[in-house]
Length: 363
Image (tube, rainbow, N blue to C red; front, side, top):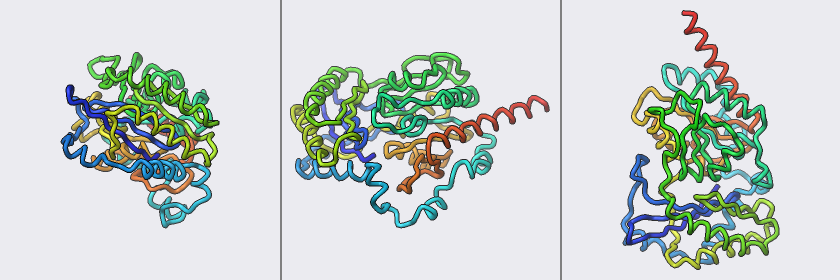
């Protein structure tokens, strides 16, 4: 998903706040620079303000263009941004199921760590985000996976909402694109030092403002049929999947009108915290920050997951797996077409681990 961001600078605290509008499932999240790992890059206030002057009408058009580009109906009806057809695309992003043995061979002698997006990866994409339920078979598979490997769910949704869908206490959960991270409550042998509870939650002081923005967005968008605003605690999502395309410009203007009521907000590019940073933070929490014998595998289906795919490629460790039926510009190494294939891939990982364990115990 393409994002447009808004940054707030608080000169008293020195904290920055980012409000990010993402098409298809548009999150609004706040953030202060983490003191923890993650490679936070500070930008001078003078340089930031110099780059913040953006024409409002152009920004609205940019948002609508991004919404159109990411809409499933347009993905099906318009040519891919890639010049290759699907077959050629698959040469560069082969099926993780078909290349399973290659992936396993690359992981030999290393600790596999699993990172999973939720919507579109563990559950199907649905019109109503409150009904994005994962199947009992998928839940059972992820439960077995967590017994074999450290496993984290990384989602743009509120962490509590994702937990209410997954219902597995032995996982790590990173909600709000990594702004709210909690370790396993029980049943995991991979908890560092036996720690549990909140690991990272830097934006707590901004929760009242997020609630305020949420209420205003609900009021502003109620005149647009099909629009849905979701409070994800550390971010607010404006869903447009059920909105007629001719109403998208109106919806974008409604969102912008809310942001205009906050004089500290400025438009900018880029995010200071994302799923890639969350991946790095979780690896450090597990004690694998600078290890050469770790093998992270991240499975996700949309633009926000690209930050994590890029981190893995830059590290030269592990693989990203994109879940998509259509060719997309991605830094993921492999692909899977839908959640059912994700489940089959996870099952094979569990079976391989169990067989490897039995082989060691017989030696």
